[in-house]
Image (spheres, rainbow, N blue to C red):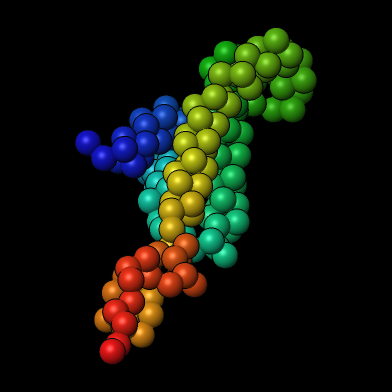
Length: 167
């Protein structure tokens, strides 16, 4: 199996629990359809960024999209986890202030960061691997050869093949 495909599969599997947390939060105020759309949308945005072959000059933008996606997933997962630990805590500000528990909140933070964080780290690794591969360009090495594929590392070098001498 292709290593890149395995890495993408890891991102998908890590994203599913995160998507469920997004669904749990969004569906409480926006309904089930909106909850599923938000959950799937965040994860598809992530997967799109992972699978795109992004030119180096656009890499910072794709990483920015991934950072926003992971931050959104983390925040929504913290809210989902904390609301399960302290039911009804988000009903009103007075309820929130009277029922807030730092330990349970810290546990919610600690449990909500690793999965999307690891998916993000895998995405960064995939992009670094993609951008570190030599760029393939079309051209010729010297005047004696026909045009063929040349890697960017060799485009300014002469062919290692000897040039035939003319009598």
